[in-house]
Length: 425
Image 1 (tube, rainbow, N blue to C red):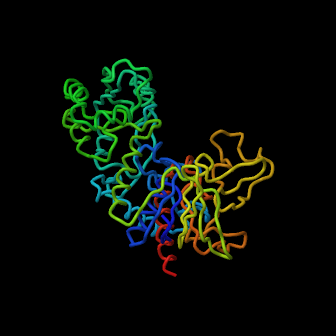
Image 2 (cartoon, one colour):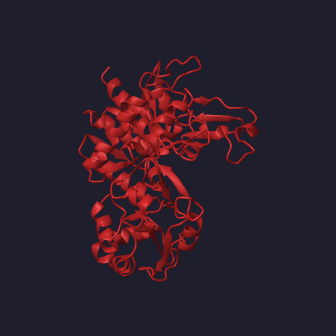
Image 3 (cartoon, one colour):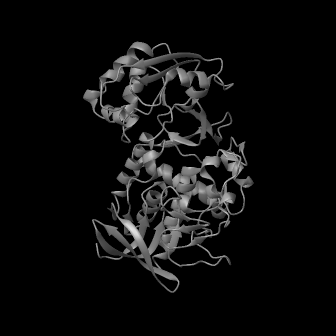
């Protein structure tokens, strides 16, 4: 534990894991400090690259990037690097048998696709698991919407009534089915993760196979909650699709994020091939700096404080909800390095009266240069060996843009490779 690693990553969400994998794949010794599961525990498992700019839908996220402001993380990195980051991510997902692919338009160009949620809304996304038959989402005429008794927040009638509001879904034929729960009566409602874990075990998935075999045969598409296993194991999905006899697409769901846990599973498997260690339940308390460099982070784990020395540091600690940004009346502060985030003193200006308007708090975060180093008001790097990635960055609104995992993958890759390069200086 006392060794000085090349790259110390804080945070095990998408940005942190991609940063760690990027640096580790370049032969660097990488250590990760994490307090929990990270953002992937609440993720749907798709990669939203860019769905909206200034409230307007952009079918082609690459074309939409040209419309973003100059301080947006995609604009700082440049589109070529964003593409390289996604290619890196897709390569490693494929190597772990959990490939991710984009939808394609009639001319073969990658584009966004609208995926259903368990609330019956449609959400634009860019990369989906390869097992998702994207064409079926647009071409299926007879659709079975399936849920499970006792499963929270997934009602086929609601899904169908909401989907019918959309022009592309209005004239389709829907069937609805709620199958008995394999868990029987329990002291609490079942979650999609409970059921997905049953699907992981071949002896426990027969209930769903029999239900699909009996009712899905005449359909072109089955929509169901994220039940196809909790791990990145495509054979689970294949078994269910074989039973249905038609494409099966999981609807995006509320947490726990079964799809996100599959991504986490695949990324951690990829990291096992490298010089990588993870220290769990470690809360970073403070940073030690000398002149223009960070020398160590002090973290508490199991009631003890420990110094973690490294040549370079990647901070992927999340935003306000993740603890990467701390709020006080009239102030926002980054939690590890203690950076003050410029913010209006009047907190009423942090949010717009319009619920769907632009909110300051949604895009507040650390200002960085194109290497992901934090910068001061004169655009000078604060430290030579500290890099930020993911939601702690300012200049973008992941919820309004539908860009959350896209920015996390891109900036994680950029921070990881820049940290790897700086560790050699």
